[in-house]
Amino acid sequence: MTVKFQVQLKIRKPVGEVFAAVIDPARLTRYFVDSASGPLEAGATVMWAFAEAPRPFPVVVSEVVQDERIVFSWPAAEPRDTRVEMTFTALDAANTMVAIAESGWPMDEKGLAGSHGNAGGWMHMMCCLKAYLEYGINLREGGAR
Image (cartoon, rainbow, N blue to C red; front, side, top):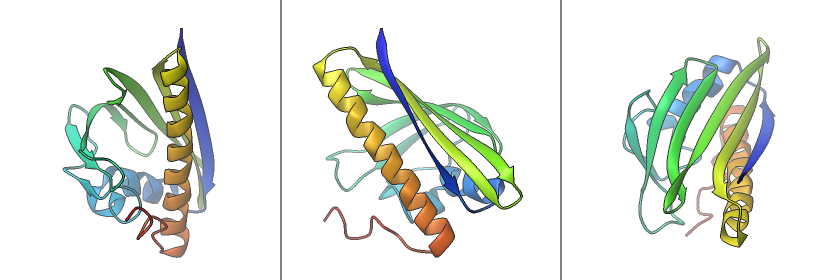
């Protein structure tokens, strides 16, 4: 048995704009990561660097469905990878529901702690995405340094 979670948040922007802000490294670095080595594309391995982490993380992208879904794995539960699935649902022409699910955490104390930490991290990412797209601000700027 493994641990999994899902978080979600409504973004008041069209689904295409929200999706683009996640796959495009130039936009992603304006609210979430310090650097991203490339766009999220199926079959790609992209390196994400965070101010809080000592080294970049490989993000291995397995699926991208334009304006609908992104699936990748990364070493969040080292030595094993977790699976992240991001879904984008157009609520109407101007609003999008973003859901992020992560699974594959081991059912032990370290796995539970890691999953709880990442649930908060993904929720923070979506709040930063919302602030960036709806108000043009970077909530992470200066926060980790």
